[in-house]
Length: 242
Figure 1 (cartoon, rainbow, N blue to C red):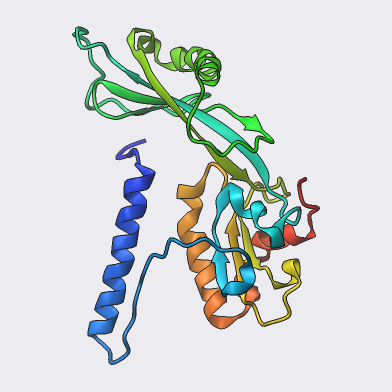
Figure 2: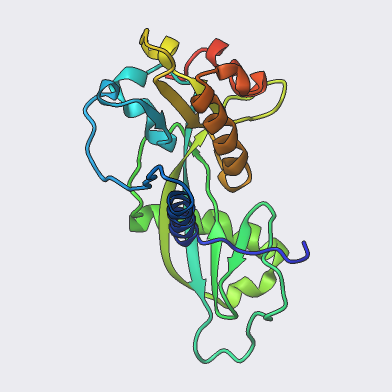
């Protein structure tokens, strides 16, 4: 894929936050109304403390008001990181692509690569750390798949593994689409569209997040869920995963 890039999610989100702050600052400078964009790291006991847009990924169902009410399928994935030994002359070419196959290979320069990912369905393990046993199992699963498309991976040394939880959406006639929409009916709140959901982005969060955010923002501002296409809100008719 020409001009394709590897994205570091943490750095990307930090840059996205800074961009939003800049937009707020520019809007304040050009109008008499002060606008602020802040990040608060606070523990929330229940949703009724705020009017909120819930974007918690696989942890959304852990909120008391949403337990057993969302049709999300949790899936733990392990990623293994490898490096070329320092005495290896042959390196991965700077113009060579990362690879998307049964196992994806995301190269971070000529000597470092991340290989992923495993799929452990119905896992409730949110710990990003990986035990030696889990890492060994994941590496044994991933290496044959990676070797099929890049045999040279056999020369690389295992460094570490890390893990995360995907919040997978249900399968529908339209495919696996994110879960968007107002949550008032779901949690039994009678006020006018105080709670919203952006979830179930699964393994395609980078693809969907911009569209999901834009659609939800329009719906929230207008207090009208109909601003969101029905394909993204039909999940309400699907029985929740337990």
